[in-house]
Image (cartoon, rainbow, N blue to C red):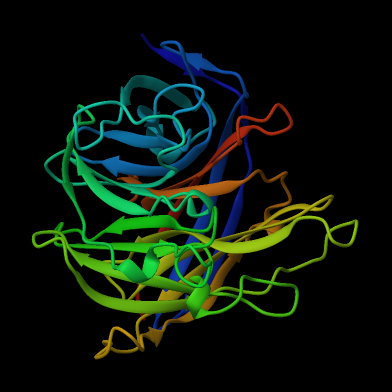
Length: 357
């Protein structure tokens, strides 16, 4: 079954930003929106929190963060056509949906996971990260699955990420492994939490950022080989009513193969104000020698999405896509609509070029 999505607004913006010894050029080609309530093969297409491109297939794997409540935890396969480097007549097709299986080969039981990150390997397998559910002492995890959703392997997440009964250690609730990105050779996988572990410091506030811990796995051994800290910005603006929801966090990373570091996506939200999205170049300035005292990445702003002048939803997923006819990379950023009728799924399509000066 194919479902064609054609809601589209054509927008053109161009940015040139030097960063970290390299330079980034971004051009917004356009956007596609999917309505809340869209159904595909008896599943609601929503909560799209992560996206990863499989070049061998020419498709994107898109993860729903449904905790197996509405339908089983699942991922979709999307075809996103960018003909001639243009998106004036975009074609977004949903071409498949697959349920995730646990280590027993069964669908995940409701509330047993919170899937937030996805990274596809060259062989067509995919890594999945779950934030865990700290209030229920359900630990976060990173697992490897085949294209049929069957679990093949579990990475060795350090116990420091597991919630303790006394609330002194581990991931914060809904602030666990939001980011997941795989090196081009498939050997190293980076996962990162959205806000600081309880023992690492405070969550982001209007006055200060939060120290998000990155862990780098060797995908062969499944063990952690390095750790870093990414410091988020403070929450950029207060909510309309004091004391209501206002957050900021690291929601996605993409490894940059040609220059040092990552693309890092920060997403803030303030009740009554909406979302504020920023894209950074985060740079490794050295290799950590002590996993208990990781180095902090430096970062430089590439784009504040407010400058696009368009309504923004809850952007959380990010992936490079196919190269464009002019040689630039495509960059796809997707939003999680939280299955809310007050939100929508937003897919932004950029052309990006970067490299050393």
